[in-house]
Image (cartoon, rainbow, N blue to C red; front, top):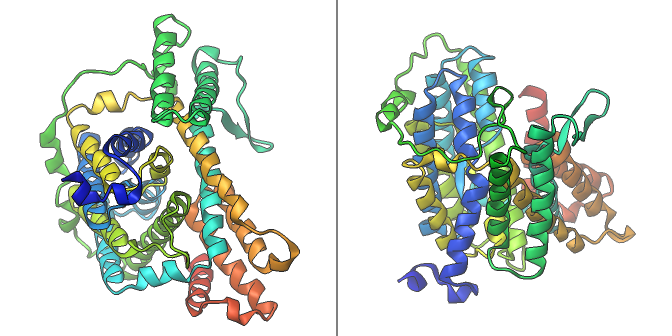
Length: 454
């Protein structure tokens, strides 16, 4: 049945590999179950309700990806988009969280229309192959940077913006967590080099177990006040009735005090970021997995984008911010995932996590950090596909700008924006008109307008 449904042999994979990959993807995404309720609760939403909404929306979106597109991509509440909802729309503009969720719902409906009418697919196909490779490389650096941050290896510095953590200061908390990440990264890398099946998953669990041992022996000392919690999983049930506090509330709004222009700006802000974060993730992960055809197109792009759009609207109704394709899907791809069975596994785990959320959320960020760092390298290796000789600087320089923009500006969509604008400007000035797809002109103008007005 699974072979018929997901075409495993055709994709050179098997059930064991797919399930392992799905578990790996989930483990690298599980942090969202702790982070999203924390962020959205500051907008006045109930944290338990947000947790349940996040789990269900992730299940719906990821299951749609599995059955509609047969691709190993998982979806959940997008980081950055949840912060935009809380800190800009609610706390900044002064709108209620119900109004913000309505904007997310409308954005999802617009996405469904764009997906059905092939507009999103046309955008995907218009991006030249060198830029698609650059997106993959840039995402590699970006998620590696996220991993370093999650581990506490990279810390803020008033002089240089970022610097390496001091291992000796606060060794029982920040220092030991950073050190465990370093050890876990070496373990994961060595296992991967030796072709261990599920090397990335083993690295996550192994790093977590080392942390638990450190806590039991007193090397790691929990300090909840500063964000260092117990590494031991808690065994308690979730209050499911809390979902009623957010379910359907996006329709229970009073727009009389909401300026129509500002509301449209909010919708299009969500729209821009979600659209190009999703496209960037699909391009990057698909490129690394070898799923693009000879023309650089993803054959199943339309159902993948439609699944993403359905997830966004469903999530808004349930009570969470924009649900989008996660770049952490690359962890599952790196573990061998190639079909929808990988994403279905992840979807089921999201559903199960409603029952045992405290256990899943006990996975510390320093334990998933090695996976992100190693997967970042695997995606970064795509840089070998970019020809950086003097004969093609007109495509190489935009690719370079796209790559460095993602980690430095902390945004996949910003990397794509700068890559597209620079590609069009450079080729236009150099009179290489044939190199530019007409859709690229439109995208470049829209991106420039975004920087001016949004």
